[in-house]
Length: 318
Image (tube, rainbow, N blue to C red):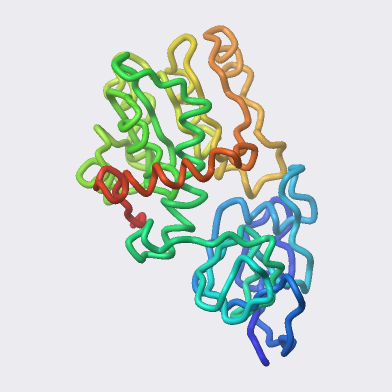
């Protein structure tokens, strides 16, 4: 059987921007027979995520993400339907997910690396298992649970950068659900600001491309910032950290402004900002959701429940 796949054609360089020519589509033969323990699946959805920029480098800069290899099929989060199974846990017609799904129209996989998913949890929207009811949702929920130190009723203010993105748009809503009294988002267009405040329940939003972030934060967070869900790093994060309260917490979700640069992860803070962090005892610890796999099942059920109750609204950023 002939199938199509996407392979890494070239690397952009550690300080370069990715381009379409870094990838190519090719056709390959899929074996007609599968072995014991394997399943043949047809790909339905693939997830394209910021961390993949690191996988385009020869060295990802981390110990938990492996680089993609030149002329080899790329992989990431994916969902498909089982077409043939020789694994005890799966039968034809099952929907399955993997975080190492090859970008290939059909593929033979080891069944031990797959998880069955229940379409009823997402009202039939299977792609949500790659988004709000999947890794981005778990990252937001578990990050806030483990690193946010939110106490309901204590009038805490949360700021979210990259607030209209996959994690940010969920993190702000989850912050409210877990007890923050005020949530302010930072994003890059007026349309995104309007989305956050009119549809996703954020109390206010700052357009960093049009407004002075420091001035806006002082106005919108008069009691300072207690929890910062950081998706971007760089100048924006330096500004937010400078306005954080004593004993406050940074949830280090991502540093997307730094992904095309050859810097360590997490990137070091400028000396002046680092001095503020230390003087105010602000926690800023690396957070890796894969270290909390024991919380995935309960997390998915919680996210699904909020979604079905209408408390967690899903929206693609404009």
